Image 1 (spheres, rainbow, N blue to C red):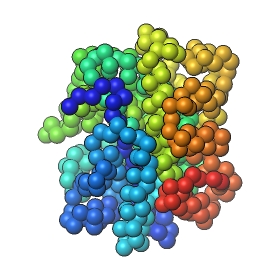
Image 2: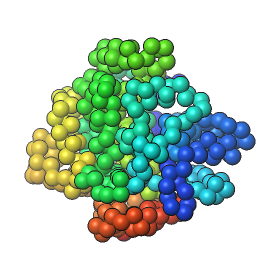
Image 3: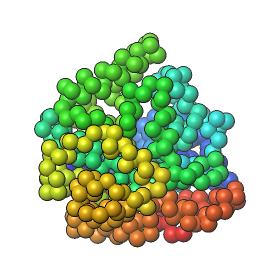
Length: 406
């Protein structure tokens, strides 16, 4: 079935499974799904939410079970599923951990790939890219799936998403600590994401998708080069072009949706869904052309947008943007940090947000991205004990669906 713009949404959330005692990753997603289902499976339908495995065995995904038109109750629905997962994980002395990267996992020694369904695909990925690295086995995110019907709707949606991608880490960054230290990036997940498929650069491109606004051109300029580049590796032809496309927003013509992938997972599902609704309302504003015409939106080359994105993954909301043309998109006349851009956008769409989601966004705009709050809580003390203490608090925020206050 084909849906029109902003008619329904699909939200996906990823979490790490860790030992309760020391927060080390625990590769038992298969045991969790078996415990829930009664037998081993890669997907479990739990009413309106579905649970499933990911590439690595210590990550579980929960997602809307099919498209939904209702975002208002989704945060609490995901939160119920978090509590149920944690209850089941108690048997294994384990629990879920939020944020987009584990702060001290050693991916080279601790990575275990999913060994069951689709393991052939994962094994091939591992052979090509060596998935034992942070960019593969230590990345948890939220994906937003947005539908379109036909080329005219795709054109509007793709143009709007491309413009917004560079500043999304300024709202959602949550991965400042890897290998037991501050990395220098507030969104380290996206720093690794840029290059984790460097062996076949056609797959990720510049993260920001190219200036392509119809299906035929997308197949010709994105899918075709990916398919050609993967041929020498995928001798059994088991990889699909939609699966291989790894840009920050991927166009899924197999289900007529664009999937946004540059959003770090937050400390609780209500914050994730609030960010999702905020992004969706801003995209609606851009699609309406109230701020800027469609032609002007389409005019932006991916290299220009990537330059902004590359700065924002380092300093998140504190990144100073002095690109006057980009600022003009949001009616800002002078150099502004990314927090000011999001505040401006919040002024424009806040009335469209549910009250609960509005409060969550106000909290983030006032207190900073989760990455900023994590660094503040650590107080420049990156001892193992202190990291465990802070991330244990984050696990509590996930269990109780609370915001993290340093």
